[in-house]
Length: 240
Image 1 (cartoon, rainbow, N blue to C red):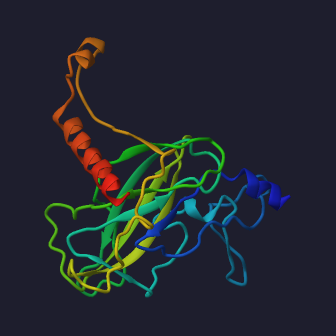
Image 2 (cartoon, rainbow, N blue to C red):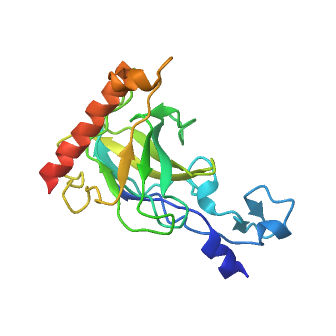
């Protein structure tokens, strides 16, 4: 029964660069339809945790606690690679990438409210499980933040499913000088865009109709998105 339930679980993501907090591609415990009291994470009397809907649905990092096994990442921002189609249900999805910042003596980020790229939509080849990944070769740190070499942050990747729920994955990093030799090199092997995964841009406008679209009446915000997406494509071409 549980195996059948697992096969119906929808969509999960894996961060392939710069790392991953841990494997949270798990669903365990009683079936949701048999546990009306479940709140998504259930604690047994012996302290065992179960996730009847799946770990990755849990904010902020898919049911995974903060780790001390950190990797180094450039202080000015760097590459992020994601495999979005591990389970079925993601022929289309919205992607958000944020960071949580630890300041001073904080033991963990108080929130994950700092976006490092504008949200965007991906389109996969099928609504079933599919391989492949996408890569953002260069992300930038949020404006009005003063991040320092040696500071700990957490990168949060959110994939919003077609039915509106969100999946969470994280990687814990320590910021390093951009030229630190301990930062894993970005190569065509760990940073590439699979040919069967597409991208759609999101933008806001007022009073845009078919005529306005024909005349190229796209907002400035949309233009900035196009520039960013173009940079992604140019970098991908360089890596290949």
